[in-house]
Image 1 (cartoon, one colour):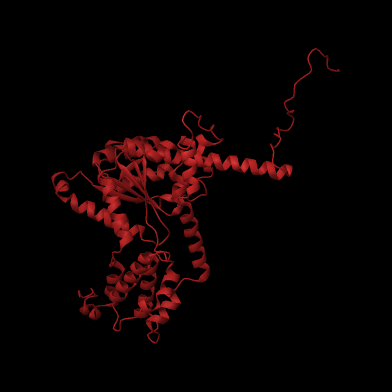
Image 2 (cartoon, one colour):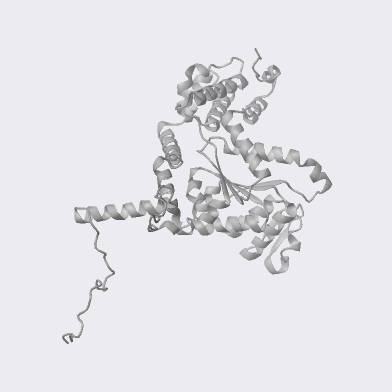
Length: 413
């Protein structure tokens, strides 16, 4: 039987900050992480027409770890090409900024941060400093004056840099921040801008975020066609394989906690599963906090006591679980959805029979949205009349209902 890997014994002789750093940087590979990593790498190498890749999952599931591993792999594979061409950059990453004011997502700020992430050394050849107030400091940092370049100029510079760098992929972390606009009807405009930038920059854009990204994926048929989705889920108690995998992760963390006495985590599976909601990232951050308190806090307390002190409150846990369950529900592929698609494609009709008429709203959000809106409209009619039937159309104030005027009769004046 193969001996399980543990932390190096001499680590116990190292300073506390070294022991904490060891655990913080320790990556525990597990099935869901490996599956998502492999699929993301395959998609980046061969996008098959995709311009955008949406990578989503619950908070604390390990999306950042996933992206860091993929980025590291792509850079390692491209070292030879980078040595031959110092201008080549295989991959870059930035965090999509949340607006400082509610609803005011700033595209100029996004493009500036994107240029900084690309380490663009020749920005002065793309944007006129004297005209737009953009320059570099002596150490190469990008500086934009208050009267900076226009949004259009920044976008052109960003797209040109993407092309010149010949990136395999540009990662947008916290991509749910693209939703931070006042009018949800403009979500499609936001995504069209991202898609267009990816297309004109000839660079696949990877959008990484929470389940809030689901509200941006299927806004139009064109966007759906040019997008690929990768889900990094939590471990669920609905499947024995997930239970076994989470137990293995728990054991791995137990073996890599640099403590004099190895703690027993696996014997209390349900406790650690509950307070991490089955998310490996949440579990690791929690254990790291407990390790910090054990090494630097009250020495009279045991590791287990510090674990209980650093666990999330039930209120925090309830909020987290509520959000992830709401996201998971959106991903369920039901037979009703399948039947709706087949119905509107005419797959279940008799030969020669006409396909059903288009439902209201289909062009705005797809077949399913049209059916939901139609059903909602019918239900409103039932509630208003108290019985099944067509609800009378209510016109605007001052506008009469459509009626047939008498012919050949002079109205009273």
